[in-house]
Image (tube, rainbow, N blue to C red; front, side, top):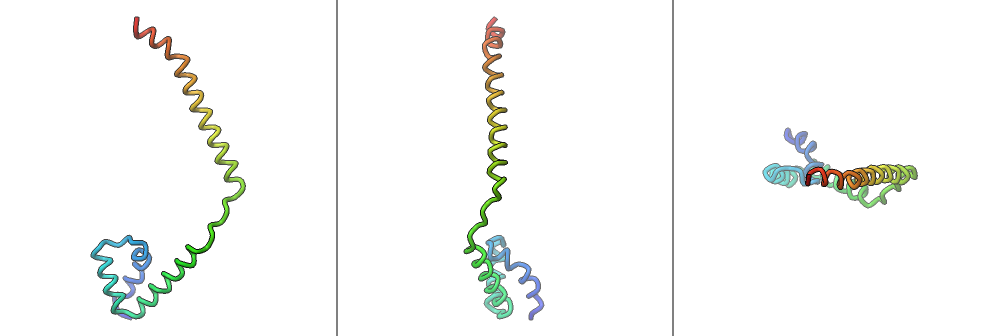
Length: 99
């Protein structure tokens, strides 16, 4: 293992995610071309990520839908109350401004 392998091993996830700067990405690619150990680590990490991405997403917990509906109902109630307030005072305010 080379001296700079420890650094590049910590950067492999960011490399796979495209989060490195162009210069860092180029340097990482160069390192992977030269270093069999880091290249093997990169390939293992990429394979593990591919397996995880291929897994189906877990279903949401049953209470999540009920919670979302309750939050949406409260928000709709607040918006309706705001519209009712605005409609109730729109005419008296308009009359007062016009006077």
